[in-house]
Length: 174
Image (cartoon, rainbow, N blue to C red; front, side, top):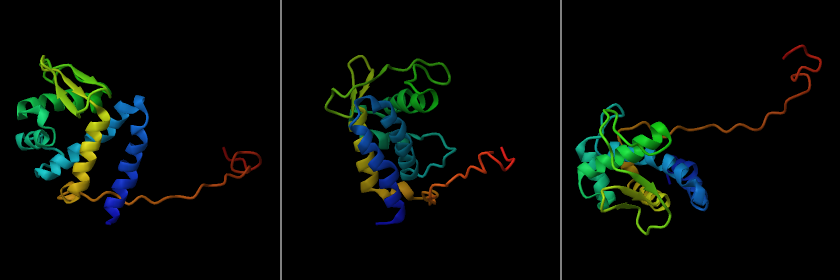
């Protein structure tokens, strides 16, 4: 197993697995899963971070989540959930340009990751959505890493003992 895949599992997969057990963690699950999905789609479709999400990436989103049906519907979903949660910590009701978006809902009570309702609104099961994202990336980790900087190596520090002298009890330091 590569160290990058090991980091991916430690930093994301295992943390998400703990969050899945907490019903009220659905928003947090999405807020971790959506950037992972974005990185995957960008790398899979050769998009730089500054590029807008091209139609090919929206087609890739439809491939992962067939309920979305079309790139147009996938873009609406992306605006509602990704742009909403990562910019406003809630679903978006309109685009940056002011166009109305379909309603977005979260529930653990549907048996699919995404459901498009008859009125065009979206319902997402955050755990099933996240599990699909994680399984897709795990099965195609080479795409997740392609043309992108590797996941950073993070050094772990041992806890530091703070002496009373440092706390200002005799050293004159704050």
